Length: 292
Image 1 (spheres, rainbow, N blue to C red):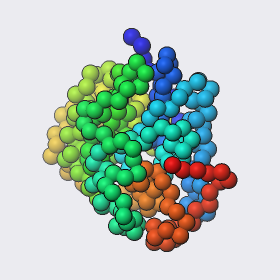
Image 2: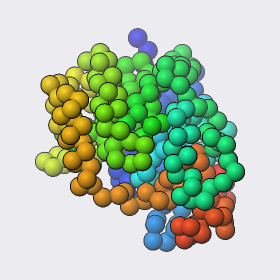
Image 3: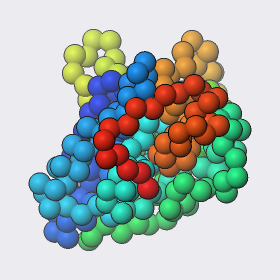
């Protein structure tokens, strides 16, 4: 049986894994959860992480058909706008992104934009998106945010922040719009897939006792060993654990610039816009930077 090619790119400053997924025959490819480099003290923007993906695609002769987001991230800036300008590929995200925009746009004085604006395709649960001889199946996995989706292609699922490696557990659910009970149901839905299904996470933080970063696991491994949600953990127990744990977590260090950019599809604020003034967020762009 043919399988898609999967290339992972780890961004250590944000512990984020981006993916280049391709049909080796047709050379059509998708980029999932890209990262725009950002140095908060200086406000300096870089495109090295995104350019590494484009370079790999060029080396393999892949053409980018989709730029996919599993959700509006709160811990890194998305390179989706930059990648769209480079490739012309549309940006897609879960259709509930409008709920997330309604929560956060007022915080950044973003006005006059329609629900869902900033993204080219808003995805529904069960929707299918072609990629050469393959197709992505969209699986709605809300809980971390209302708009979280996972992408299934053959035996691989890209789960975003819904699950981490088994020794690290699960995503937080305390951001506005988050819901620990919904997260539990989303996880159980993923863990009902065949045991050999491969799960690819969006982050890894090296759980205590593990020396190497990792981002690929299986349904069977998660059901047997996930420290938060292994088989036998019921919804009430998970929700109690998740709510208690979330009270101990600090906000991600890039939460403000990340949300400001990511709820708009990776588009940076224009110089002097209300959002920049509100955050006092300087932006130092590299020469020739373009965004869609």
